[in-house]
Image (tube, rainbow, N blue to C red; front, top):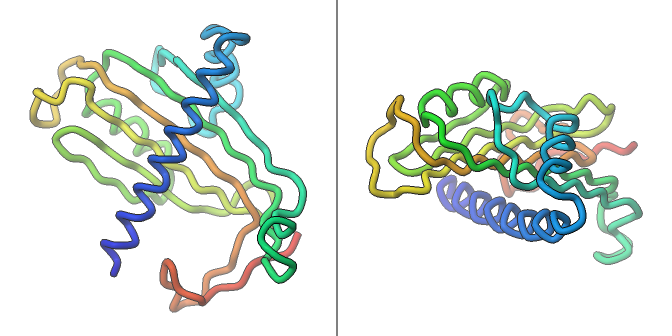
Length: 184
């Protein structure tokens, strides 16, 4: 069950990143990469790695009651704030992974031959909100094996989602029905 939940969550986040990348690329025609880099530097939820080469930035806010779309009995799920940053850099996988692991507090992490993921769910600075922060690091050249200190082409994606929080009970299980939503 736990692996199924992790797989579902990973696929959902990856799909969201793909859609946010498309939205960011559409904005590049009017923003330009310099503007995207400046916005990312200003609004990044965590420090980006040194000399980060930002190729896409997108922020979205979903105000208004989402319950209008999902029924009157649905919990209040707004506001939702999303920040997405995509970088493509020639940097060492080990150092890049370590940088983001240091800046994502209380995180879960995974690293393999071709990809790394770091993520957490913490209270936001905004009362009553929680923040999900995920960093995905992917090798462009899948022929390289092992976690190395050599420079290589990597795609680094930062995804931050803030929404009204819940207070998990001691027996909270992802996908379960325990826990209560907080009201703003």
